[in-house]
Image (tube, rainbow, N blue to C red; front, side, top):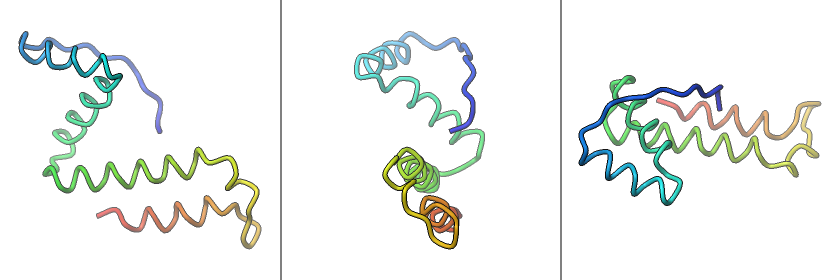
Length: 90
């Protein structure tokens, strides 16, 4: 994932209360980030969810330390898997 920087916004109280509930489950930042990314990228819900799933799959592969021990043609297996996953992006 790319470098994260903090950013503040003003919210109506009803949204603030909902975000506060998500924060109890440590899901607030991800929810806000996903919503902003969806709006800025101009994606519909399905496409945004699809892209998010691909990015999460790539992240899981990158965070798997065991996969670093396997190489094909001199490149780590994660390189080949991520290359295939990136082709799925619309």
